Length: 257
Ligand SMILES: [Zn+2]
Ligand SMILES: [Zn+2]
Figure 1 (tube, rainbow, N blue to C red):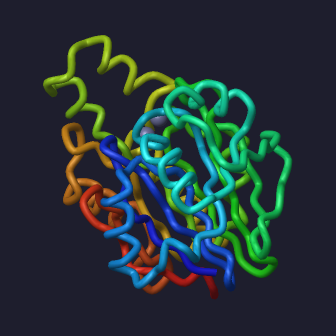
Figure 2: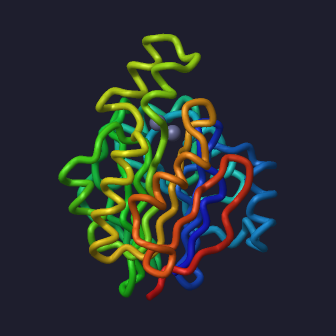
């Protein structure tokens, strides 16, 4: 199993996960042109995509979903509330498949287990994706780390985890107060220390590859996250650490011991 975070942040999110010939995208907040350029940078033909799965209906996750699904006749998987909330934005889809939160479903070689996260959307989820041998966790857009999130991610070998903001940068930054409160709330976005508390815990279990994602361009800084992460996590020989970026795709990363 391999994956690449094609881009992550408030201007657009999309992650590619592949197992054998199965290629699934998690969310698509990018324009068609932008997404195709990012896939091309990894030598991935868009015609080879199998399906698109959605975490929640916010624009930075679904903006390009409808166009992509129609152009490549991709089935789109979402839960009912996300589907209803995103329907107007996405337009008519060629194939729509509904999943239940908490119930695993299968797309060819991938088994996908959606779990609830804490975010101000209709019914937002994260995913654990497995190919029978190894598993990858995807968890962004959550204000807090719940017991369920911890449980779901604990067996993962690789995790894509939100490290959205530095609390002081939010409080001293340019956001108006209501927006600050939204970001900092339990249904907002994950602060660096909360993210790294979880990552440190997972590093003591099965985690060997961590991609920190959905970094705020205004309320966070890559150097700050990296410095905090290096302080909190074991060395690169134990847990490989990468930051997902807004502007370009990560390399394809192998999920395998
Ligand atoms: Zn969101
Ligand atoms: Zn988001």
